[in-house]
Image (cartoon, rainbow, N blue to C red):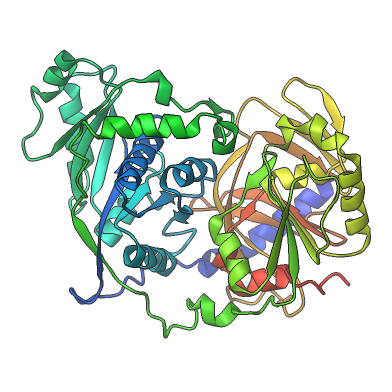
Length: 492
């Protein structure tokens, strides 16, 4: 993109900055008053920690697998926009894992997901994001909003009596935070446990320890944990982790929480009514394999609810692209599979033919990189890509962008308000997380804004029949706009 285009877009962003800020619905403004006894009771915990890397995913997965092995139905959620942890958690629980985030999903969206889970489940587990109080909104915000007790996971491998102080801080930093207690992670000896317990406040429950066990350590790389489907011994690891739960105080179901149905009479949030069968007769091809797997479970559910027929394929293994009306290429790890992707010539030819047929293509992050002319991997080796968008991407060893964000797609699709009037019809929420930078020789059609900092974020490109960005769309955040994006006639 030229510097002139960047300046023009920057000026446009500045001119609508305050308008767009006003368009963002704010969290915690619409919490309804609920009558005790009118909801559904279900055991629930939020698994949180002082910081990332404490072992939240391992403990959550261990809990899910332990209780699943007892014959209980366990529904697991993930706070925030992460794609990778939910794959591990799904493997542990056997159930789909949805995001819970008071901003990304929305207050009523979270309420609806939790209520449905409570109706169907014996136990709800929610893995937090980063540290307990990190982010806007944070895991603590979710705990307080829905009155779900927090289980603190504290990595105690390099501490002793300080464990008590960390526990006290987690429990007392926020006055109204429901707090269940703590579990010590990576603790092997009985003497270590004695030191931890020396000054431990008796008002909090100590659930025991998870030992340091290399057999349950989940390997990681630049975007997070290695994908569950890439770990040949993942089930053995999860069963081993579950065996450690048997030696803690977490074998019994935690206390029950009352969950309430959302107001089904509210047309704005009743997406089932507004979208049911709207995409009937639309066949959406979704690329899903080890190279492209970063897609929200809620996105899939939304498209199915709208009546679309979803057809999955692999850019790595399938010789041909299935027949369909729309091609959806999510993010993932194309940089790890470049040679295999580019060697699948017949599949590449089919994608090019699909693009030439003027049918819509939606590409997110790694999906957009797949469409570019060139990709340079971590070692500096250059590869030719599909060439459907002019530009190149370069992998780097540090994070290029991370965070929740939103974009105003005013003017997109038939029926959009091209004037950019003060309404929320064109706002899409999502997030980005990538280790590459892209130089794309196109004038962007928009630019995202980070939440809550309002920093400028990712560019959005509309090129012929392609809608592409580093941003991962959370489709249920704007049902009407999503239906326009997935309108099979919009490019014909």
